[in-house]
Image (tube, rainbow, N blue to C red; front, top):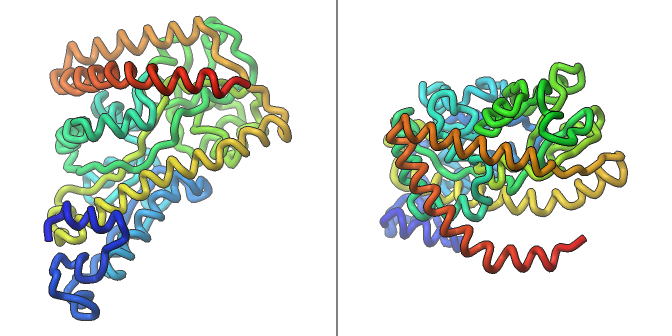
Length: 365
């Protein structure tokens, strides 16, 4: 059976023992016995306490085990147990783990184009990002990840994020200068351009840095995760929108050599399970964030504040100049950027026609 047929059947719950082995004639115990027992390790960039973003890897692992009749077991390690949270790409590349679950923009120091696998400031929403992958973006990103001996798969999305927690209000662009803020990716580079001292800190270490004054501000994801991390206990000014992460995608990494040694049916199981875990993460956040935001404001005295127009305009100008500069120096970056930009333009024309006009009317406070 071909892999695409497997995926189609798995998506409607039709994966049986005979399908997973790829042999239509083998069923029951004989099919299960024909499958090799394989144990892998997956390094996550996230702490176990963040049940939604970390939990996507656990959902994935459980689904792979189910699809392979318990023969393909992938143990998920939280950040810091197998490798530090910001070293997942290195771990998978160097075969210290067969898999990883992370955000690719953590590694733009290796190649700025990795940001396109997660989010670019003032870029695309979660739906647009997934559509871009389907429209050729995934092929472009896999060509890039081949340089790291990695095959990437979609690993979830948080949806548009909040704009961060600040100890003191930031009324305008001048108020950013000199602040110490945890913010990764190209958003961090933009903030640095606007005068912020930027730090890249793994999720499980952010609260202590904010609490002891090592940083003045931080961003993470949105209300549900941010409340679990306790930022409201230290900072009460909660800004929006997270212009640097309008639809940040997470990724599952697989070491290319480990992938190639897998039976085809196990490769198919990974493809199915990553797709399911990816969709599930977005649903989880959309279901949990409304109540969390309400609690932050009503129960914890958090003040919601919108970024000023001068901050938004300066940030947008900064990222445009930055991407243009990267493209001028790197042909591979330019190829991805040109494709991404063209898709974003066409997608924006559609979304602004139907979705934006609807939400502007229907979501009035």
